[in-house]
Image (cartoon, rainbow, N blue to C red; front, side, top):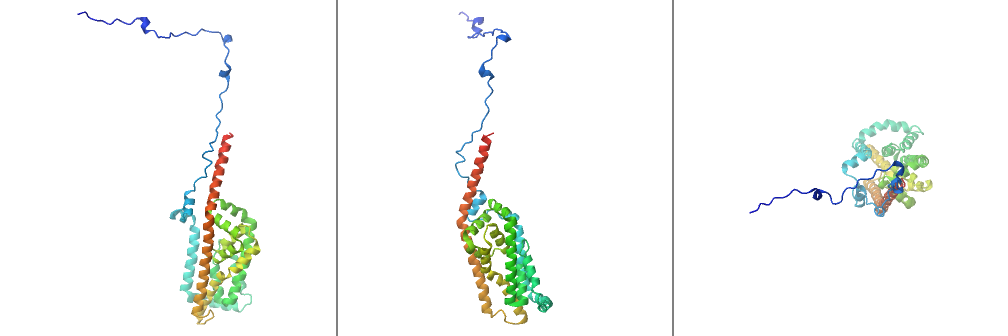
Length: 325
């Protein structure tokens, strides 16, 4: 049987199908560059896509919580943001508790002061000046001063001192904020949803909403600062201050009650009248607070939507600036 052997491939079989053509050497003066070769590379230009910008941005987590009626942030975050307000509220609460718990000792200590002021016709100037001075935030303690006025001068004269101090102090604070801090407070509307809602409610509500703020649980300092920053006229706010006088009368009346308890008199009226007056003020305060809350709840979605549109506008401006580079 014959043996098959494989022969080695020849050079023609190993050669490539397309033989390599060696380039001809040319002279430098014979080479002419192509115009396309010398053309500069085109610069990369960014064209923003407007498909993503056409849609309004979604609410932030804090805005979504506020729309759902929840707290905008967690408890720990809220504590870090508003710890000053919480400290002030705790101090006021402790002060009222101490006054009611130790009213006998306080009244006994105030008797020399009361006698000294009663002997001098200008004695009322001292609490009046103190009341005006603490009308400027962050000072506090108007309720305590009003209670002392009720203890020393009674309901009529005591409330007269408090009313005069309220009007003078709030007018001075109103003018100070309007002419020196209005622009700064108006810029705050862009960062705080709650503040923006309150400001819109004040601008659209007129004297009625200002009076509701004065009757509510909101601190008078905050109300005056808010109203002054919203370009409300002074005479309109003066009407609201007068309507809100019952709220300033309550601590004066409580001071009269404490003085009656110490001396055994009935200047504050019988117990039924005392309870009815205090209950009336509390009910008015709750109703005013709910009235303001309903206005804020109604306008809050619009405020948040405007904030979303503002974010969209900023995104479009930033992308347009990038496309022009």
